[in-house]
Length: 136
Image (cartoon, rainbow, N blue to C red; front, side):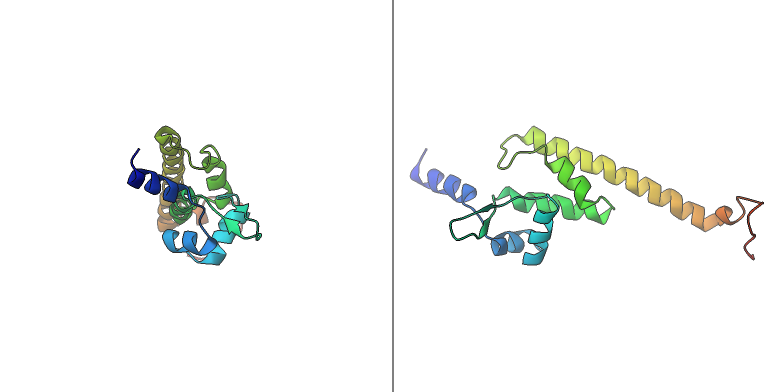
């Protein structure tokens, strides 16, 4: 390994501050702490008791953000991402986590689509004749 390659490798494993993770993930520092609280990412504390994150915290936050947009909870995302150890070089683990988030996202989109279709017909208002009738 050349000196340049060694420096790049060390930089990719250098611990990141809350602010560095926030900037790289496109969120606020408070959001980083929020994702940590929900288990999407984890930190260790340095000798000064400051949080330090591995570089993959950025990827985990970005995945969780995308998943949130289709209704996947942070708890669900954290559970899926827990299968990927910090700094895992195994692309299959990352792919499996991504595929599971995609599967869940599609399931949520299909449910939303069905709900919108139900709303568009108003059939749910006429579904139970013994219930109080809605004016229409």
